[in-house]
Length: 130
Image 1 (tube, rainbow, N blue to C red):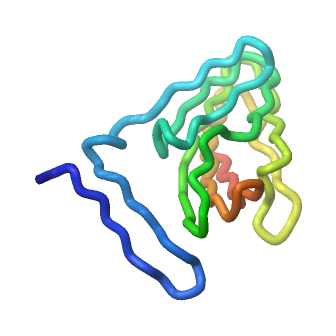
Image 2 (image 1 turned 30 degrees about the vertical axis):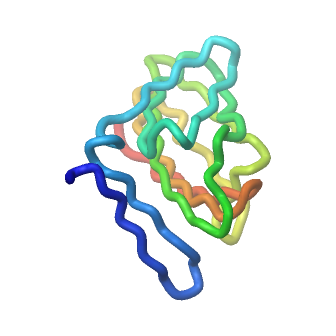
């Protein structure tokens, strides 16, 4: 059977679940038309968004928490005009204030998130080149 989840216990971090690649392959493309976009954590672990306006990444829906940790990645590209990306209250920097994505024209960014609780997500922002 290729539809199997891998589950193991780690010291101090709780339970990590790795979903079947056949189910989680690809990425979910997000669109924004009202200056806000949200991810559905039950939908995927990989997301993509092309900024076409100043946008807020709203708090996600379907946070799978109950002592479990979940990781996700979001890839953000700047359009031909540089825009900003704000964050909902659940998103936090690791040990400090959450940074900002690059605002240069055509900059590519990656956000890596770790869900720590139903209202807390650690995020690391990596700003790439154009």
